[in-house]
Length: 91
Image (cartoon, rainbow, N blue to C red; front, side, top):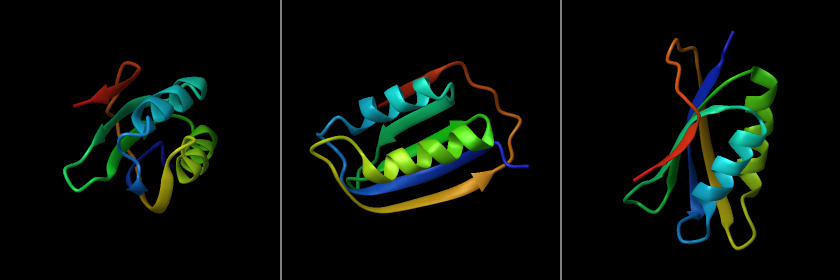
C-alpha cells in the first residue's frame, strides 16, 4: 500500500504562491511533507498520509492557485516509513 508520493509541477508555478497553496491544501487534508522551488522553475513536493487524501492533493496540485499555469505534473508513489511533523515550505 502506498502512503506517500514525490513529484514535480511544471509551468508558471514560481512567484504565484504555489508553495503556500500547496501547504494550505496539505494541511486541510492532514498530510505531512514539504514543498520547495527548484532552480529550473518547477516545484518539488513530497507528501505523506492516507491514500485518499494524497489522491485529492494530487488533483489540487494539477490545478494550482489563481495566477499559476500548471503545464505538467510528474508524480511517483512511494512506500515510506519516514514520518514528518507538519507540512513545510523549504528553501
